[in-house]
Length: 199
View 1: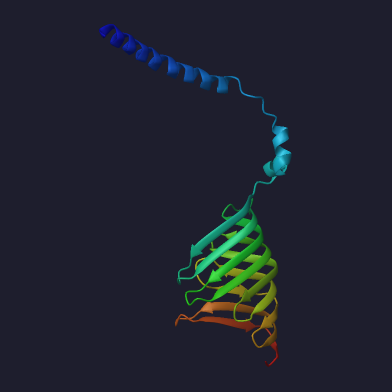
View 2 (view 1 turned 60 degrees about the horizontal axis):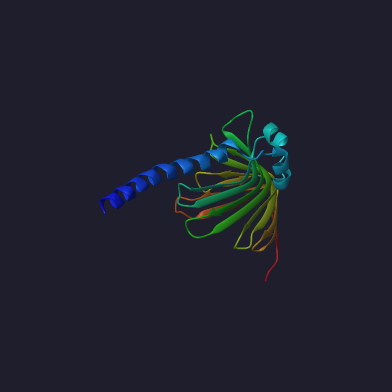
């Protein structure tokens, strides 16, 4: 009985030593004898141009979200985002979509072909076919619009045209601000023309 116990103990000791060594040997063959990788075969599968990415580094499908000082919420997404080579605190973007939710529940949506985020001034500049829309019936277009990233404020210094709740609107510019009473005020400037269309 004692010999059988001693034999069993020796077998267990041997197995404890052999099995980890066998596992180590198997793992080492995975690293020592890998299959050769052909990097040119992987690139066409994903449609990535490595040389172009090295020449022009960028981030795709970028998003930014934040809470404004007045309690509003801002969400910005961009198809591409690049660091400005002249000033690293600025980011150049294309395919911009922006959503501004005010504390009173109103929502403003903006879209533009391109833009620039200036982290030094907390301003987002939208350029090229800028479209502004909200639930009350405004759908306006302009070519240049500046939006604050830290508070509810936007300003267009280029002509604005589109649909308003009361009819067709044309103006030289516009500005959205938040008053001391907390209400938001959209002001049109520069020769405002409204073609009223009653219901």
